[in-house]
Length: 144
Image 1 (tube, rainbow, N blue to C red):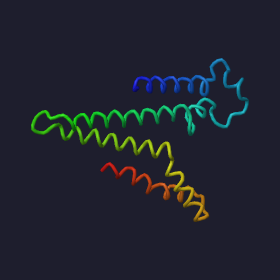
Image 2: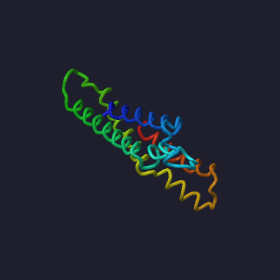
Image 3: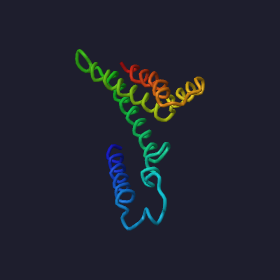
Image 4: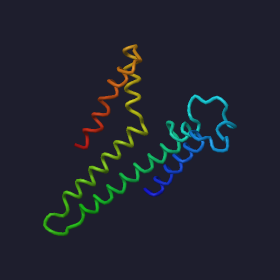
């Protein structure tokens, strides 16, 4: 999976550089005459794009593999201390990646910020950041 992810990112970045930045063979010019945002970049890296779907897949796979191996270590009875540190580490990786997946796919910070800005009647960037901060603190603190 990691190789697929790295290959996809290299191909995506190459496409962005070749089409959006260098306009190789005039592809960008022919497809879109007036660009406010680079075309390939926007399609590959926007919300719900193929890149984000791959990210969700890799986060979920990481959580599943880590929890599987943590469970296997919990069932092993080798030696006096059956790899307690390794099991705890893998459990932490599993919990942290699941929280990252929930935050990235479900966007709770966006929802909290929208609610707070709506209640306050203020859509400034400072209010948005202040409203999102507790969500990120919670997501970051849970694995601790």
